[in-house]
Length: 77
Image (cartoon, rainbow, N blue to C red; front, side, top):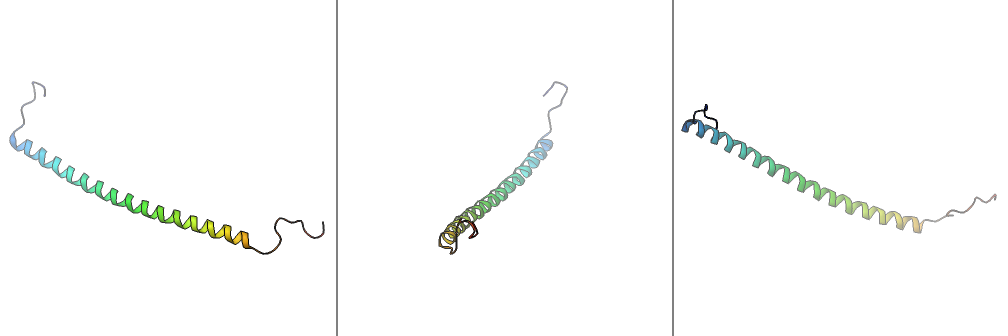
């Protein structure tokens, strides 16, 4: 505080504190909302990873049991 500034009145200080408390409340709510969103996204990512792993297993199984020629030259060679 410089010498030219006057000390704030208790009313002004109370208003500033109220404004800061409102901002803090809003920020806490925002942080909680973001945390819930991130948690939900991680759950979805984990589920998708499991699905991909299952699909890769099924694909490998299907390829190993597929009938027909594999990488064989056509009969006219």
